[in-house]
Image 1 (cartoon, rainbow, N blue to C red):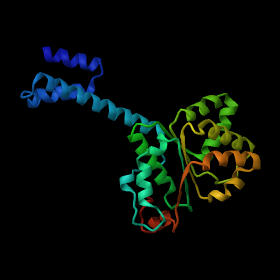
Image 2: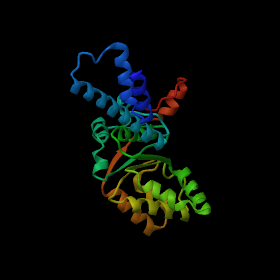
Image 3: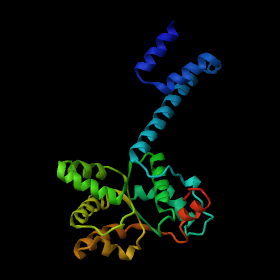
Image 4: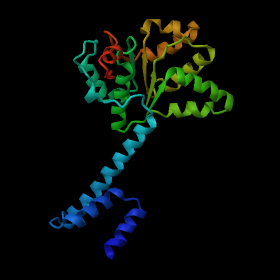
Length: 250
């Protein structure tokens, strides 16, 4: 009867990790040989692990990645100009701690989005707040936000992220409204948080994509000066695997 009362109280207090460990001990007698302080330590450890794992799951879900990706599943054997040592260093996420940016460029289907998502997932695993956006869809969303009055909230949400991923920048040149939004996003994050940008277009041509020389100079100056660059090369992995009846661009 006492055990049922303890279980009930643990559920009410949402001590799910501790509850699971306690219920397991009742079935398997795993804690019988532990001292009192060892038993308490194990219960607390189980609760800490459970809360940590649930927090990581929430952060990952809210990031809204395009791919379910991981550094461990990256294929470094394919010849596409990826420096494994550089990627593994970036996976440590010290670039986020240092408020640095990442720029990933390369032709379509080469694995830019997967790599960006893998780095983002790793950042989530380390407890950083991350948000993924397709750049074209983001600018369309911000235009709608201007119309319905939610623009400030959308910009503020991005500003709170420790890593912001803008995928596929430059599919089409930016119009005045998108250019202004990009400037605001980059200005808000400059030396305060990290931004990861992927593009099919070489960095040198981003000025043309952004347009309006003065604004382009301001945006590029803030992005480039502390950025890590990865230039992917080779044939499209999407085409390669589709020919084989597969879809794997990691």
